[in-house]
Amino acid sequence: MTQVPVVVIGAGHAGLAVSHVLTGRGVEHVVLERGEVANTWRTERWDSLRLLTPNWLTRLPGLAYEGDDPDGFMTVEELIGFIERYAELGDAPVRTQTEVTSVAPGDSGYVVTTRDGSWEAQAVVLATGAFNRPKVPAVAASLPDELEQVTTLDYKRPDGLRPGRVLVVGASATGLQIADELLRSGREVTVAVGEHVRMPRACTGRDIMWWLDRIGRLDERYDQVDDLVRARHVPSPQLVGTPDREDLDLNALTARGAELVGRLAAVRDGHALFSGSLRNVCNLADLKLVRLLDTIDARTAEDGLGDDAIARPEPTRVPASPRLDVDLVAGGYETVLWATGFRSDYAWLDVPVLDRKGELRHDGGIVRDAPGLYRIGLNFLRRRKSSFIHGAEDDATDLVEDLVAHLGSSIRTFPINFV
Ligand SMILES: Cc1cc2nc3c(=O)[nH]c(=O)nc-3n(C[C@H](O)[C@H](O)[C@H](O)COP(=O)(O)OP(=O)(O)OC[C@H]3O[C@@H](n4cnc5c(N)ncnc54)[C@H](O)[C@@H]3O)c2cc1C
Image 1: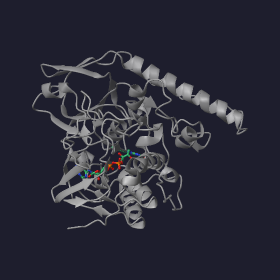
Image 2 (image 1 turned 180 degrees about the vertical axis):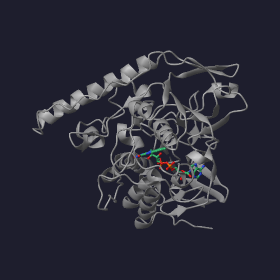
Image 3 (image 1 turned 30 degrees about the vertical axis):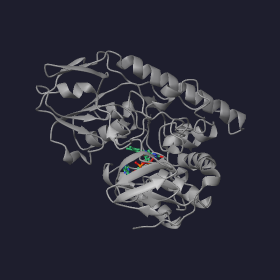
């Protein structure tokens, strides 16, 4: 068994940010990665995806965007290059192709078992990503066998789907971006719409992410919000990062021919039954958008950036009688695409720190019930920005602060013995 003070699991941007801060504090550690650096971006994203956050916001501790297009949006390939460069610059001690199969309590902390030997560590940081498994609702099991079911982790491009109509379930960033791509490729698309967050790409010439930063929204802390459980489950904003900085909302999709229906509530005898709440969820999203724009207007006036109120976008156009019951096979549907969110996978975590829903019990990434165990990369882990790339900056620094205190004077500085 190899001994090391700290094991970081996962070489995505979050694990590498932790590694960078640990190195800065002189703490010996190893980063274990089941695939290659930036593995999920290589294997689990669709071809045309670009970040929805602008380049200037793609930064990590010790590395900022240095290109000549700070307001642009990286392709997946560019982001992989950025993360690889980060690992190289920091000379991160990454062991690739090393899948962790178990983390269990040990004599001096934890025993981390991999397919390539075991490690004993006083502290373990789980940086394994928040989007490991698609969250597919139970109704999926009742869909007719004739239909193909695809999740957003498997989707790559329109021609990877069978020809025919597509039902996209979910109207957050992922669902809207894929629905838009399918429509542009000539598909007929129906979108089942539940709770969603509508946002314009830009206001008064500034990107919406600039404004969210400016009004302090991204820095809101986990211990300052009224309902943290709810805050952690807010859907991702309806945004897309394209070279022409276009808006992507339900109106854009209906203009391209999409049909909107309510939330998928049940499947019975091959019929999809949709909730009658479409108008309500759209009204609510419109209302929240107006509130956000009011806040931005107030801030613009306060900062002396101008007195003109931002033009309010057209309310979401909802059909007078959205369909509530669709016979999927007879209606020509071939594919149901689940864009219903993700969950973490802890199948390998043999420490009793999960709640009844299988989510990790933690206090801002510090697992109080298991001293020395840490988590990074979850929604609203410590701040609203935690799930964004730049959110790892502050979170990694905070967690390493606690981790170093945990190691205290017992910190063991024996050399890592790679066998
Ligand atoms: C579709 C999509 C679009 C997104 N767009 C943006 C965006 O525009 N801007 C933004 O800021 N954020 C975006 N995000 C959110 C976020 O930045 C990414 O999800 C990011 O990949 C999370 O980084 P991470 O390091 O926490 O996890 P990951 O990048 O998922 O890295 C986790 C690593 O852990 C490894 N791992 C997992 N289990 C094991 C194991 N048992 N043993 C060893 N290794 C393991 C994985 O292989 C992986 O390399 C997006 C997310 C998704 C899903």
